[in-house]
Image (cartoon, rainbow, N blue to C red; front, top):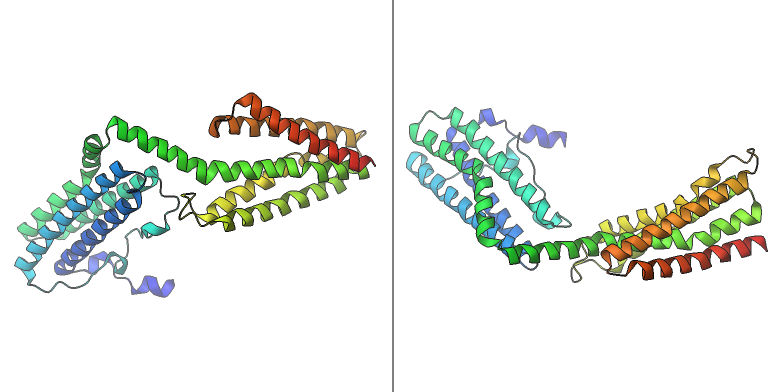
Amino acid sequence: MFRFQLSRRSFDSLSMKEILALAIAAEEEDAHRYRDIAERLRADFSASARIFEEMAIEEDGHRRSLIDLFKSKFGDHIPLVRREDVSGFIRHKPVWTLQPLTLDLVRREAATMEYQAARFYRTAMARASDPDIRKLLGDLAAAEASHEHMAGKLEEANLTPDARAEEEATQKRMFILQYVQPGLAGLMDGSVSTLAPVFAAAFATQNNWETFLIGMAASIGAGISMGFAEALSDDGSMTGRGGPWLRGAVCGIMTTLGGVGHTLPYLVPDRVPNAFWIATAIASVIVLIELWVIAWIRAKYMDTPFMRAAFQVVLGGFLVFLTGILLGSA
């Protein structure tokens, strides 16, 4: 990394010829990036894809103006100078690595690109002494700075109320697929499946510290298992469920949290009078809260009536809870 930084040139060391060459390469890269975004959005967000296609066309116009000016000032050969060769530029990740590709994410990405481009042109204009070059660079700085307003106009033209409603519905559906479903599966598994080992250990040993260790082992182990199972279930390319490792992380973390919730009360020191019953009472209340949260999530995001979801979750949780107590007391 240090050698890479040393190999990059400072902006102040560039000649005006190299600055124009850099601007041409930057406009070409930005246009290509906008088209990559448009292509990624096309299947689910067709109206927003058209916005980024229009922005790519705008960048193509900037590139042609720069090439015409370069040829009139320096000839036909344009040296290859890229932003990655010059220090001070933000390095953007390839579009295909942006997971999940949400509308908010790509719009923030576009805003960053336009801000960087406007700043670059203002800085370059300050270096220019040729009136033609100075004029074009100033015009491009103003154009890049106004792209935020242009994006707003394009949204008005392309995002009709029906299109906006459709995109919002699609985005909500993707959020559910990529975050809510794996998170809910993890929370249910962590909250319910660890009830039996935790309460079996509690009633078998009536030792808070041993119960805590068993509960943490069960919770973390379940989180690792569920995380890998979710990540390896599918790569998201056909189902639209997003990056597998992100889903796996969400599922694994929520699984662990689901088990840790009713394990933490057993940190009550054993030397405290009635420590076991205090910890068990607190853990039981936390179990009820966990089950209520699961039922609420199912009702809000999975279109399950709350009372039905509560009945299903509470019944299942109670049976597992009772199983742990009976086995621990045997």
